[in-house]
Image 1 (cartoon, one colour):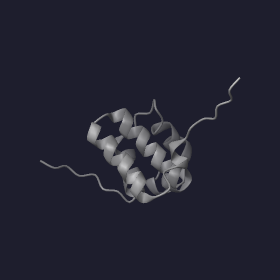
Image 2 (image 1 turned 120 degrees about the vertical axis):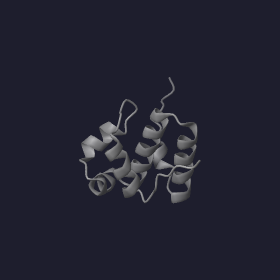
Image 3 (image 1 turned 90 degrees about the vertical axis):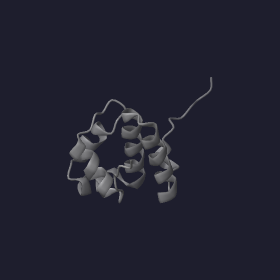
Length: 92
């Protein structure tokens, strides 16, 4: 029997550049679920507790909001983006 281990991309996204590339790809797709999960991966890579603290939410609430089944409020999304040092912008 082959033993497998769970894969967590957060363990491999150890540079701001690699994190930004994941988020850029997620935003380019326009897929809300992918964007949510990508933000969760980057938040875990940077430290969920510190991101949650800076975003003004509890760690547990942030895990839930940024999970595969999560649906974060806009205020949570903007708080996480700010905590990660990112800006959300629109271009025509």
